[in-house]
Image (cartoon, rainbow, N blue to C red; front, side, top):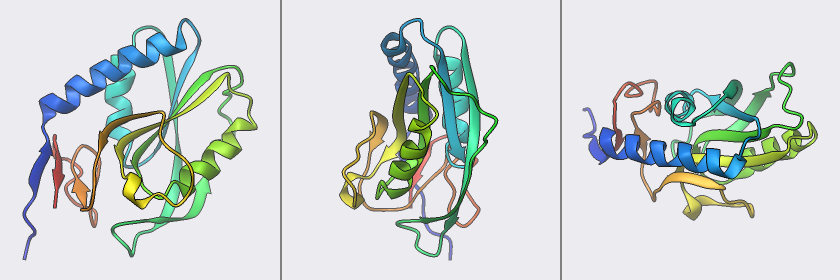
Amino acid sequence: MRKKIKKAFSEKVIANRVAKLGKRIRKDAGSGEIFLLGILRGASCFLTDLLRAIPGDVSYGFIDVVRDVTDTEVATAMEIDFLNWINITGKNVYVLKDVVSTGVIENYLLTQLRQKNPAELRLVALLDRPDLRTVDLNPDYSLFEVDKGAFVGYGLELEGKHANLPYIGKM
């Protein structure tokens, strides 16, 4: 039996928030170099739209975090594939994550990335789940704060499905 998907955030709401965030990031970074670092796969749609919403030159890259997804509420990192060729020294780096839940993975990534001497290092969440936080970490920017439930669409998938929905839905 297929679970019903209820639209949580429409395409229009997502587009408006991404546009505002792009302008805010450019304002905060000033004329400095901006580098968006997306965590695959869930942040891919978010990164693409945000990349186009930031005025001026912006570069980007991806890292992959292989997860244990047996628990749909909280995934734990099994392996992190860093792209060592990415030079972020002196750049304003924005790490894009689909869902920030416990904060453990993000805390580890930020610690590792600080060693590459970026000018600024910020965490950007598509969805923020502060109710699940187990470490003292909060995103610098987030599009939406959400509570319990599984979310799909706009790059977010559940059991390999629904990532292609143009909106964010809750199951």
